[in-house]
Image 1 (cartoon, rainbow, N blue to C red):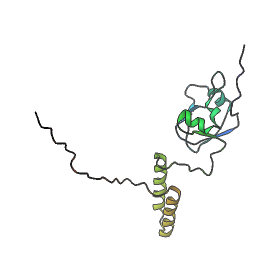
Image 2 (image 1 turned 30 degrees about the horizontal axis):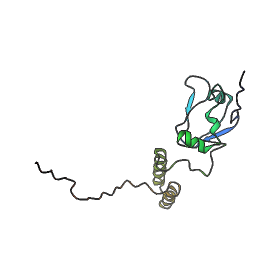
Image 3 (image 1 turned 180 degrees about the horizontal axis):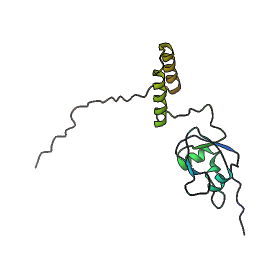
Image 4 (image 1 turned 30 degrees about the vertical axis):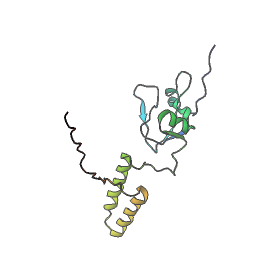
Length: 154
């Protein structure tokens, strides 16, 4: 008795987008022919990708493309979606190293604008696009001595 392979959730020519960095996947069935996802990246699926990422029964991570809850349950994050990266999604997630780098690069570019009025506009655009700068201040409350008196010896 033979079991038929199930049809993949995606087909060659379909587009997928990555919502999170760090997902390793194969681009063809070749040693070392893998890539790591980058948030905002849109990838066109190839026949080789479908085959390289499918097991003998035809199952692959592509099966979860339309199931964000299942992705969250399996990996702890939603990594991929169907189609192009949504224009409504920010390219960087606030607080990540990528966001910090992008914000700092935008801030440095704004400060490099020679005209004062244009520089102020560019700096406002940084705050509009990235939000306010993260605060690294910490508040520490002193609650007195933490020394515990020694117990009396019997």
